[in-house]
Length: 113
Length: 110
Image 1 (cartoon, chains in turn green, yellow):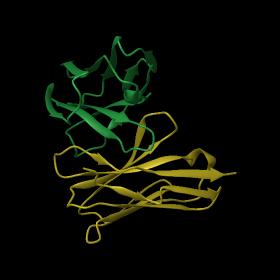
Image 2: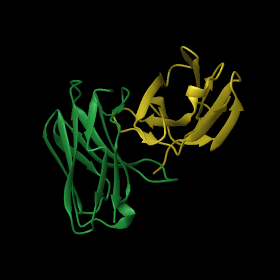
Image 3: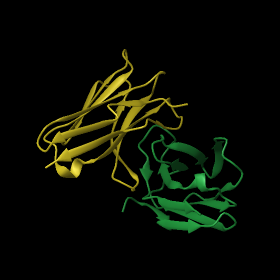
Image 4: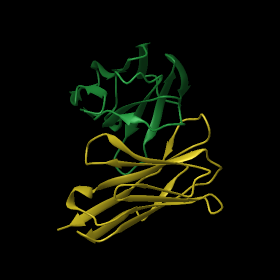
């Protein structure tokens, strides 16, 4: 275990479903991130939270909605997704945004049918 | 925009050989980091090298940084089957987020 836990590990959902991905870290880090990893593409940064405030939203469609209720938890709420949203969704945390290494969770493999 | 670009995209070597991967970037950086990802899993932080450093070692890993050429290399010595993974470089411009490259897929053949 890395100290960053993501649930569920796998998720299959229909295009009309609503689901949430959860990320939890107990490393005392003050920044958390959502990344999307699709086949043969670089990691795409979706959202950045620093001190529980969203500081970046990289033109992500509104069908993805992040939530950071406290410094240890991060959610990604999903609704009316498209098949092209199928990917590995990775959560990471760090102390500061770029001065130290990131700790990643194992990811959620999402399949939209 | 993508900052780091790894080269080669794929590398296949025999167990025991050394593996070298390269990373080039475009703008000035505060630090450069290397990560490993086993298939379908999260990334694991390997090593961070700051812009005022030229070389760092960690076990069988050796990282170099040439800021004049805006490039870095990751050397894995005496490779093992367990080193089979994708390796990513990521750059940081001060207190900014990390930007990852597309990665090098390394295969170690027994």
